[in-house]
Amino acid sequence: MTTAQIDGVSITTQANVYFDGKCFSHNLTKPDGTKLSVGVILPATLVFNTSAPEVIEGVAGSCEYKLDGSTTWMRSGPGESFAVPGQSRFEIRVTEAYHYVCHFR
Image (tube, rainbow, N blue to C red; front, side):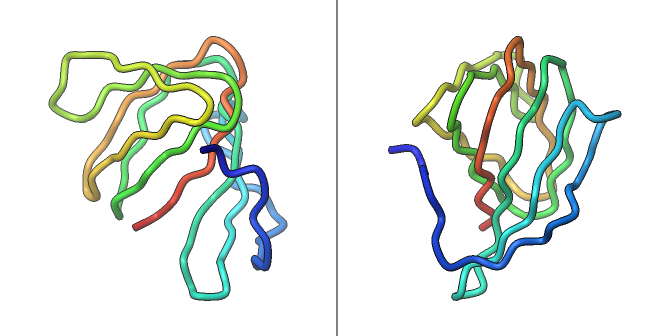
């Protein structure tokens, strides 16, 4: 199931802009303190480093991703998610705008 709405959150209104504007997001905090971000990646191939474990949930569009240490590209679309370990990195490539929710664990 895709997250369509997130109620009762606090949002940081200034966008996080990465990779010369190819990725942008906003940080949200739920009432219980859980952190997440909501964003869009424009067509590109990018490498992200993680500090905490993340689950990336596709909302619209699709992507291919490759976790650190893997040689296999995996596909993820709307309603699907993938987990990335903390203190790691992953590559992601998109050919159309990929809308996502990133859940930090």
